[in-house]
Image (cartoon, rainbow, N blue to C red; front, side):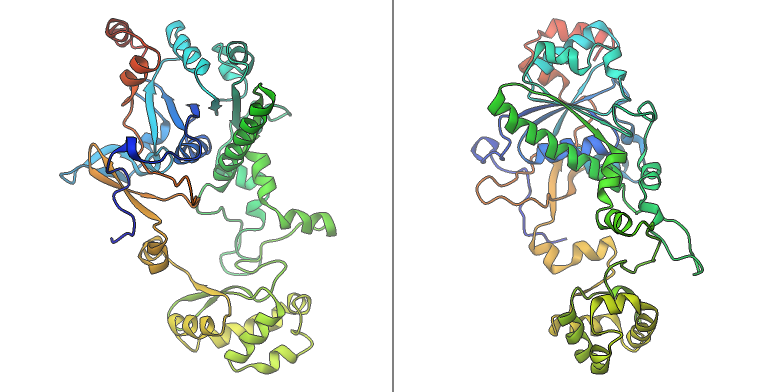
Length: 423
């Protein structure tokens, strides 16, 4: 597929400008999605991210497949697509933290790091002597971020938290899915791990805020990020709908609780999403589809009226959209500046000319497959552009390099650690 960006990691790295987080080192003791998503964001921004993994095992997501990346000969490797999606740009170092020497390696790395991010169960790292108080004692400037399902306090703090359950517990599934009484009614999860991803984003924002504070105060701090908290916050206007009315919002299928018409409609050959956000857009919509009388009808002339009378208006719009194919509707509505869009598959997304023009797919060199595609960050900087240097690392790919060049261990020391299965 054609892309507007060159091979992302070609050329001399020493001559390339570094990202806005150049000089920041992150010690990454996270697994699965939320933590790795957060640390990949920091890696994209130019931070050095050292990912600690279990020897011979690694992050659980290395085995979450198929699909797995194919090698140059088209044979499946052990690199899962899931793992590749959230570990770009990191260094993989394998360490058994249950051993005294393994703990010593982590302490040495923490002493040289700016940020430490972990997503173990609440209090679990403290049992290994790697809790916040342990690391603060050797590096008072360290920013230590814990990402857990339920946070470090509260009656649920010791529970394990996975995205699916947190989408349910945080209220998202109560407003996602078809309405009761309609075919296929029932709660639905979102098709991607939004509780994980939102927690990862909040973690990235939090640690960078703490970096700014540390630069002023000279000391670090502990950050407590919960998937449940993040999912609840993610509910945004739906939370306020409840606070204002005292009535819990319900599932509306593809409809919007506060705006109408703002939903998906079937067409002659597919689907279209109509997103009319204000009254002037509704006037233009009515005009271009030849239903001017709708915009002057008191039942539909304002958004509150349309929301109140959606059960009358929506069936009429639905019948109208069945008269033409999707592309014809898109062309007609776009020309009239009425917000709308197609329901794309992911294949459609990356074939879209605008997505290609924005360079949202990049190619990275990979030691097993030659190249591997990756999705670009949505953050674009004028002076310190993001450089996509490396794909997700192979398990333990950088162990020798980090221990030699950062911790200054000798070949004999590294050999002894390997023989003892500590690394």
